[in-house]
Image (tube, one colour):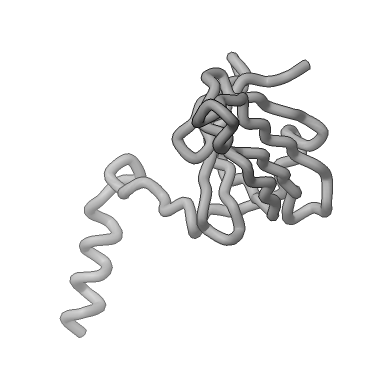
Length: 123
């Protein structure tokens, strides 16, 4: 009986504004349809492997493609690596299904932060 009373007091005693923010892993995820068909290019050049005179720099690229209603495909060219996989979106977060990478898109500026790098939309 005591547990029921405490639970009721806790439920009535706090407002929605006092609740902690939702964990992105429990937020509803859907395909990132607004990104599908778009390409982004790193703003700053980064290391792309060794050339004849040492490290070479290039602009990494990130492309998104349609797949289904629950996930969107991505292809990421970074360093001397071409990598791909699936992402879902929850709010402004872009979540790699393998949990290796996360991104955030500012829809006003079309600036994308992905794995710590800043990318600009390529029209």
